[in-house]
Image (cartoon, rainbow, N blue to C red; front, side, top):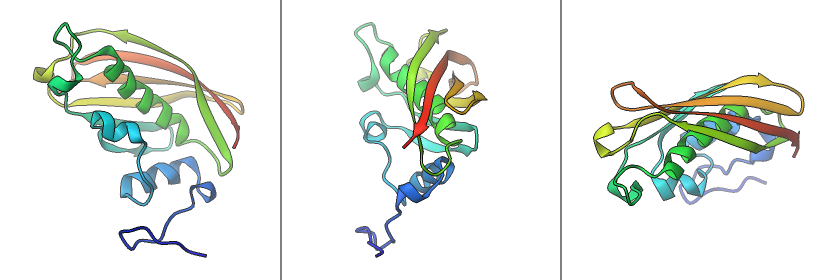
Length: 156
């Protein structure tokens, strides 16, 4: 049975797709994005197997009391890029979860930093664990933060 979304498009069953196909379906609008994407304003979601990127234009609403983008927003961008890079390697019937995220903040980020781009890539993908990294670049291409993430891969 094929269900349709309110847009009239056929609904996609994510359990029949690889991780890469799931992410591509989100990018096309065939599957809904994660709610966090709307919460903080993630944009430009895309990539290929083993590498994924996401962008965000920093707003004052992202600021901490010190007048810079909150570390949690920066960490979310890096976690999304690293995690989606791992997600893009999943076979049908596999899932994953983050085991840890280590973030290094290298420069202050403000609205003047311009559009931010988090670029993630898988460093190692085993049967049960994966290691990924992500860098966060400002509009000038300067690296403002770096992260590594260990993930556990399991049957979904």
